[in-house]
Image (cartoon, one colour):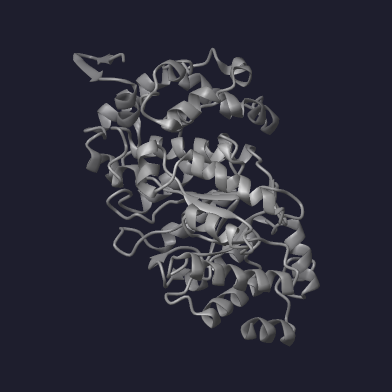
Length: 460
């Protein structure tokens, strides 16, 4: 692997390889400092960004950041790279690629045409030399549409995951949260529960409960219990009503090994879910979550910066045509993203990189209570992401997840951003909201709610 040098006046800057150059060019964040890969000065970071801008895109096909022989994700990235899709941009450097992405000639159709020619490392690299407004503008050009019981990701639409978590998996408490969310027009992306008791038996109980609600009210949405993929496979084998298969994923094989799965496991689960044929308008059956810092926390980052590891995880997601992907951007804590500024930057990077690679990218706009961040920071990030065309965010009662113990976005936050930017729910879900008299045709909350709706749901 080549050493990279840059002379500035009398000072010579050295970067030992492409991975080191990428890490030093990354905007400041606490996780890279913890890993010992971050730039030591702002001058070194600026020089690294200048050097990175001159790197040809082709270099990333010839100088892999994690050895091909050691890592199945590297093999996935290289083996499934499309030279045909890459051809039109193969002559560009990273800096040229940035300019191309920002140009008027680079439309959503053009972006769609080059997706399979982009590697995660190329996309991570260009994000490192882009300002926040660049990330927003380019991501807004991308349109990634997926379908199961409704249509997610259309321009002018903004969806939410209704997240009715409960610290004891109490069914009445979960039902109350589902009711609350539906009455605020949340839940078109998915009704998704993180189980407090994570085993096959309890997950089956939760799956049946959500499915009963969806079927009873003919809600055009999908359910998911966010358990380990092997638990979901067992639920499928036992006949449970599984809509979406969930798994948290990382950007290196060693990360996913630590999570207890590999690409073969995901392939088996993907096929099992497809065979259920539970979707009514499409067959995107996977739901993935990611987050900067997961590879470092597993000591599986191979010396890479955390954002590059994160984007490599998107190659895993792209392989399985998911309905939903979201970065849980501030969940791990200040050891990885220290404050509101770092969380906002990371959220915009993740969204941009995921959308550019063709993923239905959402974001859990969140922080932990010991981070140097507050709900105003989350308001800022929510507004920026929605402007950038984010697919979905979380909807939690009062923005406080009392089971996972972190702060995220509320049902009201979704109403705020839809009203501010004129965004709508998924079209099928919107029709249902009108029919249930939850919202009117102007997408405003109705003055009254049918008694049978609330009473029946709480009683289920």
